Length: 109
Length: 115
Image 1 (cartoon, each protein chain N blue to C red):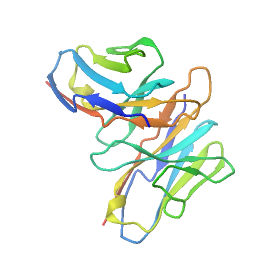
Image 2 (cartoon, rainbow over the protein chains, first blue to last red):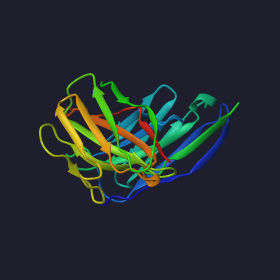
Image 3 (cartoon, rainbow over the protein chains, first blue to last red):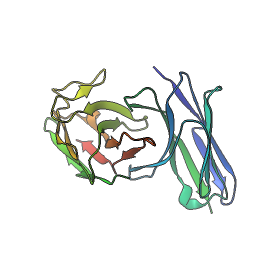
């Protein structure tokens, strides 16, 4: 079974700061997902990665397959970025996800 | 993309009763999943909802407690039976479209509180 570890568990930043959230996993995967969960519970898919790097607005996600590690970066952070960010991995063709415990990000104005 | 709606969005139930959660997708999808997120915990897969056949349950989850239906490619229900306070969680429906760029989409979740 894949073990997914995220760090840090909690992160507090000032508006405008550059933020990095890390994710490591123990077994080879077919894809890694970064998800955002707001206080109401709903989840939004931010990225799905199998290699390299993806960028969407102020969000950047990278993955190093050899090192079994991924990072999510937020540039010019804003209070509306405050949420729980979750890393999840899938292996094989069954699309079942294994989730990390999430990183609670709070961005203060 | 896929837009998912869940009903109800939240509910408060009494011990011993059951709650049925509906998941509706705006387009046909190949895979549908049900997840549970207990307070302070990561999401855990309950089962894969299979169209026209019995769901495939993960270890620790059984059909008698979590009966699931999936009558077609856009709809599924999860029932949480014989509720206890330990069932208080967020329940999420997720779908996947099997394509070149596969992505999973998540519903808004149903927040259940059992008294």
